[in-house]
Length: 185
Image 1 (tube, helix red, strand yellow):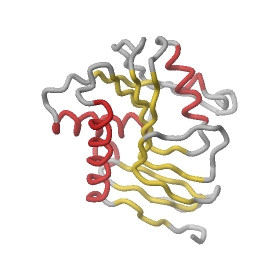
Image 2: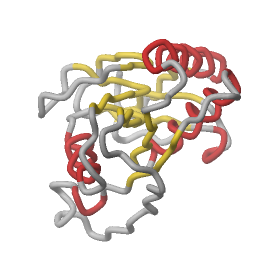
Image 3: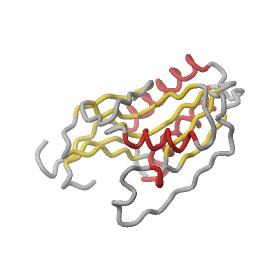
Image 4: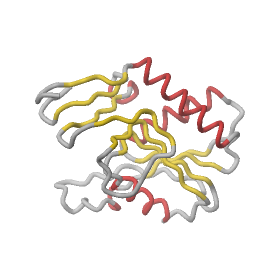
């Protein structure tokens, strides 16, 4: 991809199909979610987690699925390097102690966001097991030994490219794009 170019890899229909597939994988592994909680990672992972949660409830309206949103701003290893930190809201009105936790993020890249999320999560208790759901897995860019259990799509990118996930609820558009660092949507 040359500088300034943008390539769409998910449109609204493919995003919907991918979310459905991820939901059915979760149902297959967690049945009625009796001992499982879903936790979205702020900021963009929360948008994906809300989409997953909503779709799971549509598929199985009788399921009791506990849901939370986790801010990792002050757990990041680069938070002192950023100019301004505006923390997001943590909504953890759930118990994670001895439960299966599914962390949800939009893009798995270096693994540092997930490491920070694990640190933040442990402040709420010791889960029985933690799994990771990533809508997009940017292969070949991991800096930490972290892998997703549920992947919407794995893609190859180079360091100068960005993956942008846009959702109707927040951005007015559904889709996933790969863009060079100089281009804008």
